[in-house]
Length: 390
Image (cartoon, rainbow, N blue to C red; front, side, top):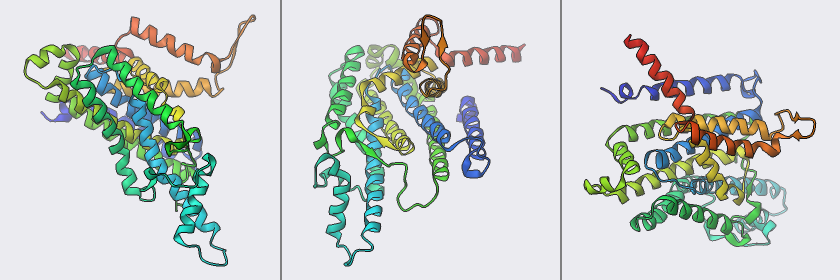
């Protein structure tokens, strides 16, 4: 029996994703119909990226039992790595254009100094930080999108897992890692412009295509990454590797007694999911247009855990459903589109109350529907199978 036959949900998911991608493409401004605005296409593209990091979170938490409250740090690092190239190359393009009419052709040093002043003048620096040494080389920065989050996860995971830190203590450690990284990035001398972050990321250097077309390109890339991420993750959890992960989640001591190196499996899944998160971040922030250290704050990783819990952890499609549902509903409530509710004595403004609603939803799902929204899919599927047998 083939992998697809054993996992029909994969084919269903990929088919729905393909039809959704095609539908959005045909209704976008880039293809003339303009039923969907460019800004909403970007929102949908960002939502697909959030679904991808939700899959990563489900692998490490839903399947392996590691409640990581630091995966948005890896997400943000991926965004910073590609953002460095986007900002540097775009600034270089602007500088060269502005110096084209100079009486004398600018030297390479003059161009480099002008780029540095444009990027780092806002933090009072005239030196290009060492971490930007490869910012003008796209393929290196693309490699760093995976390598930097992966290396951080590898080092952190090796130190934590070899010490056999588990449960809430491990969650606190991952949160502390995220907070430390965010606080470091807030400093102007971090080399990443401190609180200003990286901006103008929506502009692809040396590309003259209008924003509607660029937004569709990023939407396609996000959809492809989500589809590939889902396929690879489903393949991993459907075999022996997935069985061992579930065994570690349910009874770590027994798996260790059977002779498996629990620490190695934890380290592999933790590092792998960090790389996936980095890729998701690298696709997300060019669509957002800006990234700053606030994006890496621990609260973002807590939101990620809430998405997976609401969608149904231990189910890849549940993580996707949870991320998409909460992301779109959040955009609706916080974007001012949800009408205020006048109770006479008090007016409920959803912009102020959305986080409370989200928190209550998490509590209610945990208490009364531990399988999340994905559990409803399981119920429907089981009923259809019973009807087919009858």
